[in-house]
Length: 182
Length: 131
Image (cartoon, rainbow over all chains, first blue to last red):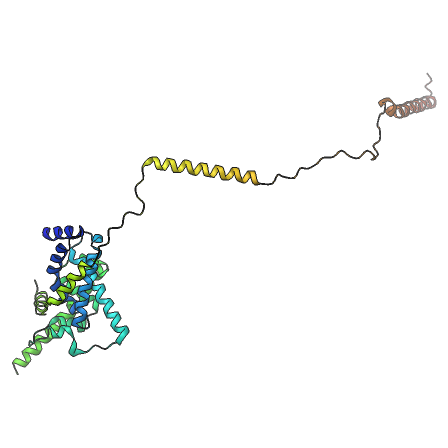
């Protein structure tokens, strides 16, 4: 964390090399998240690039009281939402299941990846809250900051998301067991 | 960590992503072409205390000047001319001696006293009381 703060300070002073180090430590994590929010792999890559460009441009406004990842995710979510809006405006609601970037990036397995279920069952905001909480290990407070929501809203919706996914998980297990026993 | 949280984490890790060299180059090239925005300087910079006094005095002086100018430019109020009444209006000269004014009343009083005396004598005569 201290290293990260040092890198941020150096980047604030204008060091592109320091910022490139930060890019290196966040790019995969952010791209994984953006894939679940964008219409295509190319869009996710564009959103990732825009996120780092905006972050570097406005790095002076970063407040070190918050985690750097919190700030980056805020920018990433905004970029993904903008791309999504552009797509809807251009093409309308034309989501092609076969070109779903998340599906393309998940290895074939017997069970559906839980994040695919999450995307099917949860709203964008609740999905993002679940991702930040369980993949990024963010606190409720940080998740609320990223989503620009209250702590209580975040808690309630995380609970709802959990319940929906637990029900889905249990249903999958029951289906597998019944198939195994014939 | 509960079962759901563990499953969510594992499934997230199963999403295979790889940042291509091309994307990496794109990002790096973009960063080199950007000038970071400087933090906005506070809109109202700190001023020394003496500035406050100076600005107050300037303000007071300005207000005074405005008031003076307004008063100078204002037209003078119309003068009301109080003229003496023209000489052809009749004015009685009331130069009268007060004794002249009371003389008739005194005369009347004397007459009344004489009448009273005559009446008294007539009554005395009737009842037989002669002086």
